[in-house]
Image 1 (spheres, rainbow, N blue to C red):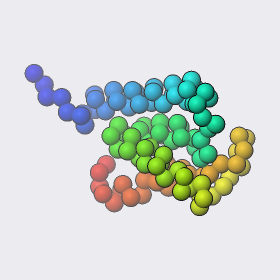
Image 2 (cartoon, helix red, strand yellow; image 1 turned 30 degrees about the horizontal axis):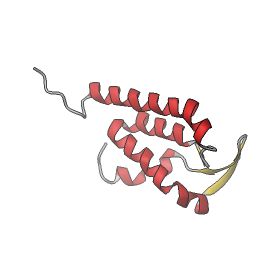
Image 3 (cartoon, rainbow, N blue to C red; image 1 turned 30 degrees about the vertical axis):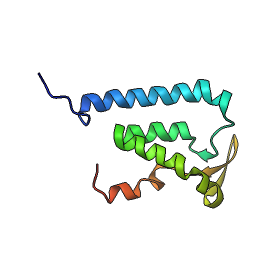
Image 4 (cartoon, one colour; image 1 turned 90 degrees about the vertical axis):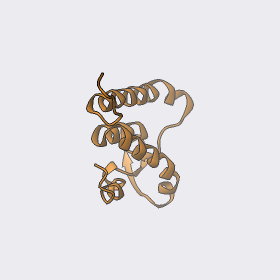
Length: 106
């Protein structure tokens, strides 16, 4: 019987699909009913999808959740841009992954 590791490509792909599907359902169905929207650009849902797609399941999920935790601070000190949906705080993925690179986790 083969050993199943969380970091294996098969499981990583499974969890990526699970997270991305869950985030899309939230963004399309639940968010309009429970929230006025993400104050950041890219939106929180897209940010989570990008993080999981680029960094894999465990690390991408941590990066996406970390963004949700620091979002309030960004509202007071971040760069404001104008989007078709109004003013948003510019907070791209590459601005929030610099410290992961120094840990040599990838």
